[in-house]
Image (cartoon, rainbow, N blue to C red; front, side):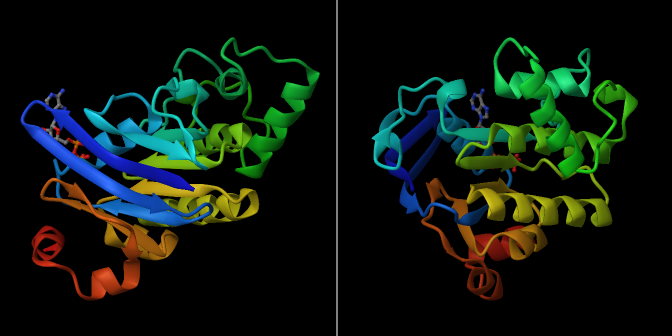
Length: 230
Ligand SMILES: Nc1ncnc2c1ncn2[C@@H]1O[C@H](COP(=O)(O)OP(=O)(O)OP(=O)(O)O)[C@@H](O)[C@H]1O
């Protein structure tokens, strides 16, 4: 279980509070107006940005002071955070250990992860030598390989066409289901929330609200969400 305990986030004039829990294995969309603080909330959970007050806990253990790489999570951004000068094999190996060392066991796991996302035989290619959709798959393969309890997605599939995006969301659902992964996904597309996430955290007016039923929220959105959805 992820617990955001009385979090207060400040960034210049910007303030955001969050005080709720997310059950293990839940899939939760994070939606709200541009600039509301969705990415910042994910940065605090992943440890790249430090909150003003409050704590982040995983299964009751305080991870507030834990370095990003040591937290029980993987995070995927739109650019898939792949290193352009390294081939996919090495990019994936860096998900396993910080030096990217590839022994026989690691190679087998990397090959299995690439195969799982439909990229078998692509290990020696660099990110620039594959398509955007394939880069998304490679990013997901690295997250899959790390097999951390939480997967944070910050609009990783926003640049993909509708068919590819649907395919990636289905792949996330499948892999998260198998590994029991807790998923938090920032998206501007309410359809993504509908498809992947039974629950949604609404971030608006300085508050990250506790998770609520996605279908009910989208069927009857509060004014701030209605304005944003158009
Ligand atoms: N380095 C910074 N210094 C001060 N304020 C910042 C900084 N970076 C972001 N902000 C502010 O923090 C707020 C939250 O930004 P954030 O990127 O988390 O919003 P978001 O909901 O993810 O937006 P979007 O949907 O447009 O990506 C914004 O109002 C932004 O202007």
